[in-house]
Amino acid sequence: MSYLEIAGVISGYGKIPILHEVSLHVNQGEMVAVIGSNGAGKTTLMHTIAGLLPLMKGSISFQGKRIDTKSASDIARMGLGYVPQRKNVFAELTVLENLEMGAYTLKNPKDQIKEMLELFPRLKERIGQRAGTLSGGERQMLALSSALIVKPKLLLLDEPITGLAPQIIKGLIELIVEIRNQGTTIVWVVEENPKDVLQHADRVYLMDSGIIKMERSGREFLEEENFEELFLGH
Ligand code: ATP
Image (cartoon, rainbow, N blue to C red; front, side, top):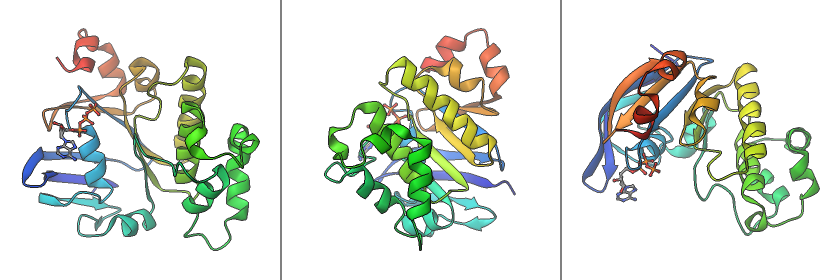
């Protein structure tokens, strides 16, 4: 069984299914990209893995254990981190308070907070600033560091670079690749800068209307003749 195994999952909102028998797997240490057009179900998939949406059918296992019956906080405690696309920081709290919230399960969070501030010097400069007043890039750094602080084994990233300045995007991609190189498994919903991200991806899943339409290695996908169209989901 793979590190993360999603088998025949149907889930959605209320009684309406959005994911239709989605199956995919992620091996330990991999960086796997999930792509697809607007409304394809990428965020719904991330929510479902993280335990925020109940399954109607199927199963999800992480490190050989079923997680689809567990609460989101139990799943997080097992080492599965999630950085949602929106509402990923506490806007009313300061940078430091956000990091403390991220680290609330740690017995002695001081060292880890220090480590995160060294990784993101920009956040150190803004330690007392309310998160709601940070720039888009700074906010993404805070969201990422609040998830990284507990050293997750697997990190779900729902498009962490959308709408950011090119310089910031480059730095964040490098940082995430470095986190993967240090052993964290990554699932990345990619909407922006596909070529810059997919060149680092071991595999790519293309979603469309709640199903997995295609699976390729990162390299194969980049070499697809109709790459742009596929990426846009046509
Ligand atoms: P995008 O790239 O636009 O963020 P996505 O691939 O992440 O899209 P989802 O956000 O998972 O897609 O949405 C999939 C479908 O589920 C869409 O049709 C959307 O309208 C619907 N949906 C999302 N959230 C809800 C909700 N809370 N209640 C009902 N339907 C929802």
